[in-house]
Image (cartoon, rainbow, N blue to C red; front, side):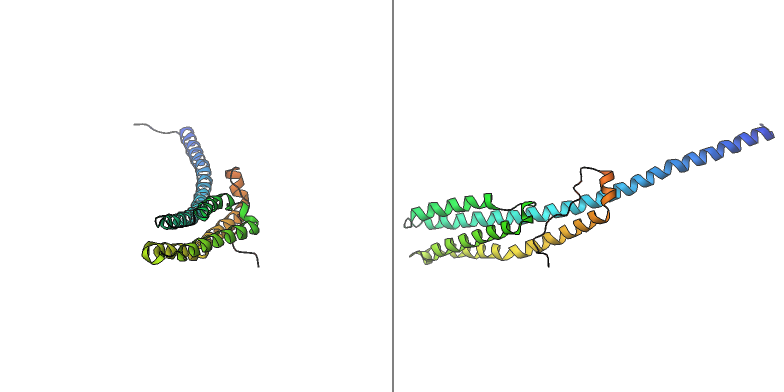
Length: 200
């Protein structure tokens, strides 16, 4: 049986208090680290949503290009068509991708307008090219493809609204947490991303 004298009790008390202080000091960085991790998780989730909506929109646009090419291919099956215009239309469809804006260049709204004008004009010309064919009624797939192209055109605004909504959330989050984001990860771009929506 051990009997503690006053000196031993005093050392034990000091040791206990020291262990408590060390324990508390250890927990504080963990709390700060947890807050930083949570901030980065939120940022990454918003950024992923922006990227996901962008990719959906671009994939839909790519599908529209393929539908226009498929309509031209259907016209070629008639063996009675203007081959020069057919080749020209195919080349113009290929040229659209090089004209298309990206997430940075869209800050210049004229690049969006130019791409939209070129895309709508080309799809309208190809549709007229198909409908004016003397055997248009004999190839019902042409009408189906035209409906699909028009549906893709009608979805553009909806895609852009969804994209803008996520970008607005991300921009607001970055503005509210600018300093913390920069200190936690200097590689994060804290600049505002451009929107399709024009400033009022």
